[in-house]
Image 1 (cartoon, rainbow, N blue to C red):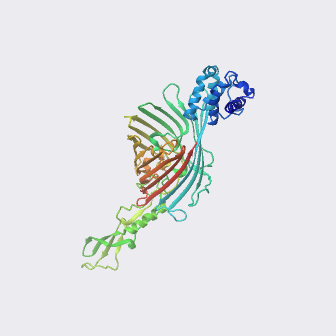
Image 2: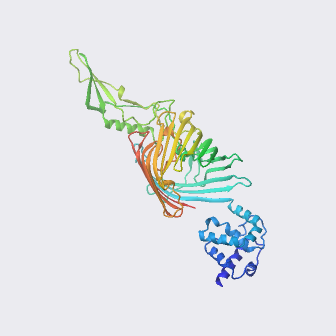
Image 3: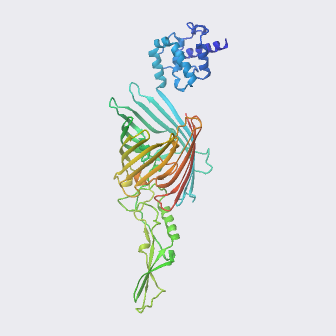
Length: 554
């Protein structure tokens, strides 16, 4: 008796909430359903499981009238929750649907409208706590340290909505980001404004990150995007920055391609530094001579000439000085038009020499107390070298990618990118890239990518890694699932636009990286990764970083 009263109460609440036009007593709700019908217990079970929770007057925005088929209406409402229902509840809903099929058919048009109304707008998102600790030799912070802690809280809201009377969908992502750069900065993060696209200040509270309309283009078999989006081609190895423009793509079982163009929407701190002409020179002196390296060059009756190498310690010190004076990041591009230099630091692999000349009296007697020195091979000119100065001009990107699946285990993708910015005096950086995936076993995957740029400098970038269970891209849905990855990255700045790799190795760095991913429960995922390597653009300096995050998806 209790079960029947509970079921009747649930049904009464739902039908009353569906429309204020119906307020039938509970005894009338099941007038065509026998009191001992199994539907009572089925409705009670769905209510206990949270599938039937009642609705407010605003829950249905379809037709304003409600038919007399109360039970069919309840089943129709339950069916809208099929995707989130457990397997037993799905069986109950389907069983109820079969039992009241005729009544549902009578409501068919209305039920379809209700389901479409409820599914028209979808909101998902994530909330994350992140922490990283980066060590960067040769680049000092304002307090003189070479270690940078960084705490971040990040909330992303995704809005997806169907465009009425079209097959198109609108997508938007809104980001709230709070940061602290103190070692003990947990829970002291603040949302601060940042500059984008060369000085445009934006707040970090509900900041629009992506927003675009996409879907099939008529009956062409092509899909299109228009707005601000990430292309996603080649796993974002070459470019992960948001693009304001359009994209046309196609995908089938074996082949896919994407053609895109637009203007990059990028944070200034994520962009490379431009190249300007320096004016300083660094010259070694006699104090830097390693006197034990003397090599005789020539000897005549009135002159003796020999060379000395500059001490390795002096070269290292000069390299650090040059790096600190001219670079605050490893993301430095080559400036072909003003200099053949591609790095901001002194080349530590070169042997710098100082020539000593001692004059004589013409009879093999030399005045060793008054030698002269030639420093032509002991000078490091900073003129035309790369220094830190953020570009303020627009950055555009046009490109295409084509992929093919050779077997169930092997696929590859080729890409072309033309990146135009102030870094190369508006001359396009043309990048040619190739990437591939090869599945190993049931859950393993070997991924590799290579990119080559045409503007000189450090223009060959590549990465290779083994991924288990998706690596750091593992789904957060399965309970207690885990994955991992490890590999090597060489992220040369003159072969990339803005790579997806930023939490570990960054552009301008090379080295080993590995990470572990674990799902504590459904949609709660933890990630830990470690990178160890060195700078590409500031030779001779080590780089390392710990990164961790805890993310809840909803």
